[in-house]
Amino acid sequence: MRVMVDTNILVSALLFPHGRMYALLCRITTHYSLVLSSYVIEELLEVTRRKFKDKVDIVDTLLCQIPYELVYTPQNPPDGLFEIRDKKDYPVLYSAIADDVDVFITGDKDFDEINIERPEIITAAMFLEKY
Image (cartoon, rainbow, N blue to C red; front, side, top):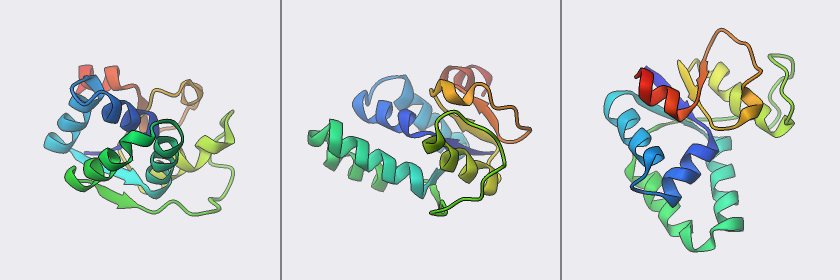
C-alpha cells in the first residue's frame, strides 16, 4: 500500500521525534510505502526555515534517513479534479491522485469535505487505528 503524508504530519514528526507522528512514520516506512511529493518537501523546508530555524538540519537528516518514493508535483497542476477551500492545498492532493496513492494522511480540516474515491483521506489517528 502506498501512503502519502501531508506537511503537517512531517512537521509534527520533526518537532516530536518520540511522539505519535514519528511512530506513524515508522509504521508506514516499516509496513508500507511512504510517498512524498516535491510540493510537500518544499513546503516542509519553507515552514521549517520560517518557524523552526534550529531544526533545518534535522529535516535534512530525517529526509536522508527515512525511505520514501519521491513524486513530482507539477508547478501548474490542472484544475477541476476537486474543490478545496485553501487553494494552496490543491497541489498536495493533486499529487496523491495523479500518483495513485492508496491513502493520504493529513491533519488539515480543509480535506474533510472532499469526497473522492481514491485516495482514502484520513487522519493520523484513523490510520494508526485502522492499519
